[in-house]
Amino acid sequence: MTFWSNEKIKNHGPKLFEPYIPENVDYSGYKLRVGSQVFVTGEKKPSKRQSYLLEENSHLSIPPGQFAIIQTEEKVTMPKNVMGFISMSSGKKLSGLINVSGFHVDPGYSGRLLFSAFNAGPNAITIDRFEEIFSIWLADLSDPHTKPYPVDKVNDGIDSNRISHLKISEERITLPVISSRVSKLYYVGTGFGALAAGLIILGVQLILGGRAKIAEFEGLISQYQSEFRQQEVRVTQPISVIPSELAIQNIEEAVVNIEERLASIESSTEEIRALEGEVSIINQQLSTINSQIELQPSASSEAIENSDNDPSALTPL
Image 1 (cartoon, rainbow, N blue to C red):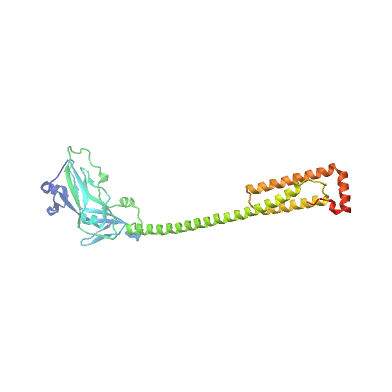
Image 2: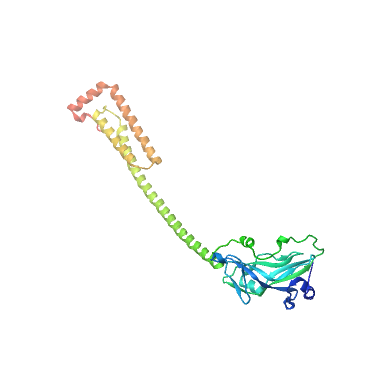
């Protein structure tokens, strides 16, 4: 593949470009001008959401974040053994205008070229009628292209089918707009971060408060364990005299009192289950005492009579 020189373009130019302007031969390329038919997205009025003619001495403006379809003034006729490569002028590129329609012209093509450009810059870009913003370079192929170029692919203007390929939107997606949205997301994220930090602090406070509550419950459990030990010592002392029913009733009331205290604790720790086991032991001891009373009725009666005559005969619990 060999690119054409400026001299070769000048020799074949009248057959390739219509109209042909010799002054548009630039180094090894040819400058193409803005034609009369254009289309720009982002129009708010439905009547302008279609291509329109660009009169002489007029211009079009491409807003930031919008597309434009621009037709060339020149009709290009490519030989079957030549391929064209197209680009946009550096001045427009530096302003933010990007060619997104393609970068070559097929062998055998004949017709005007359509450029689809996107304004990625922060400001509107103005393009004048007949402005030379496109360039084409030509290169020879090793063999000619024998297949005829499809007629339906020839650009005969900016029709509704080409416009329908673009998503018509009034919203402008530009770098400042994206930056603004990112800033909003940052502030939202910062707010959620502060909320998360507050929740973490609240959780730590709840944990510390829960530990304090556990310590309080442990203190109560220690107190109840001490009381149980006192009751256990009183119950497990050697019984020299069978206690009266009144003494048994006092023990039962003590057990009931302790059970009521246990019921007031809302924790289900291992210490509470241990206390319940101690209550069970006391109940078993009470059952043993009741069994002894049933097995020794005479001694119980005698003890009761002695307690009636001499209250000191009973061993206190």
